[in-house]
Amino acid sequence: MSSIAESVGKEGLLSSKPLKSNHASRYVLVIHGGAGAVTRQGSTPEQQAAYKAALSQALLSGYKLLNEGADAIDAVVAAVSVMEDNPLFNSAKGAVFNVDGKIELETSVMLSKPPSSHPEIPVNRRGLGLTLLTRAKNPSHLVRALYLSPSFAPHTFLSGATAESLGETLGETLVDPSYFFTEHRWKEHRRGLGLPEEPVPHSESFFDTIPIPPLDQLPTGTVGAVALDIHGCIASLTSTGGKTNKLVGRIGDTPQMGSGFWAEEWTETGLIRRLWRKINGRNSLTRGVGVSGTGDGDYFIRKSAAVTIAHRVRYLHESLDQATRHIIQDLLKDGGLGGIIALDTDGNVSMPLNCGGMYRGVIREDGIAKTAIFNDEEVS
Image 1 (spheres, rainbow, N blue to C red):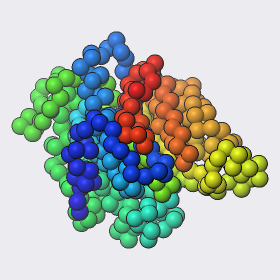
Image 2 (tube, rainbow, N blue to C red):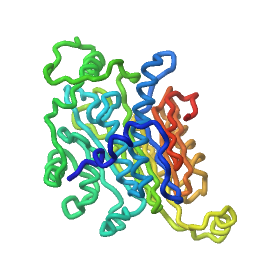
Image 3 (tube, one colour):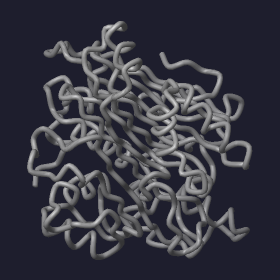
Image 4 (cartoon, rainbow, N blue to C red):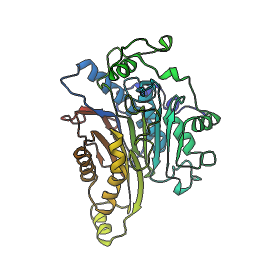
């Protein structure tokens, strides 16, 4: 199976110039690279520049596909895989260690409706979560492949070797677990347990290309992307290494549908709502929402955060921004730190956070990648 990242092409990944749109229809991509206790005072200009460059690269990779008319699911995989390959982020190559010094990865995908390129996917397929992965080089690729193969993986939640062996059958790349080991994450793991940083396992396998240390120490966040394509489909994809020094076998919100991710669509039925959309120039009565969360996932699970946002929009008729901000403040009341990215089929985007920072960005039809890090910063 050809790589999603390869299909994007080097020009789309590396160019900082806006790409000209080929379509009049609305499409948008929003991403996050984790949220937590990151501060402007505790960072350097070099660190900030490195994160923003990585976010822009991810946005441009997904944008190139959306601009060519590709499905939202392909765009979010392209964006997330860029961050999975970058050890700055807590996913795949940059994943954190559990309490036993091992890597256990999680990922998920969910669509508001089946992708246009795969009309055979059942409408009730919805999405898929994967957990306890130890060998999938790009979990985002794996979950896409399994979602698109319902005969191989008819369930909504799979774990470990079963998911990875099915993916290998479909052409997905598996690696030795040492591929994910990076020295800075190992030292964080040891310090977090009050242990000496040495000895370093698999020292010959460490490959840390970061010339600067990451901003987040002992991270709990994820990476994620939500996209709207020209066919009106929303796809949400999330990928993570979980919480630093989590218990072995701990499962977070990332693979749990309704907690760390969600996507759905519906048709407005109320007469007033239908008239209001027509007055505001919205020709379609179909609405949809996609959500991806990042932060301390245990709190997202307790609040069913992602699905609650969608249902506040759908049933309480709140704006996307109202719904996401309500949930992010609700999480904070219980001590849950993190952030949320969300978008709807009208192209509205919301990216609230309740902590020091969230690596985040958005790109629209004009092809201009806009990014931000800190909680007092607007995307630009």
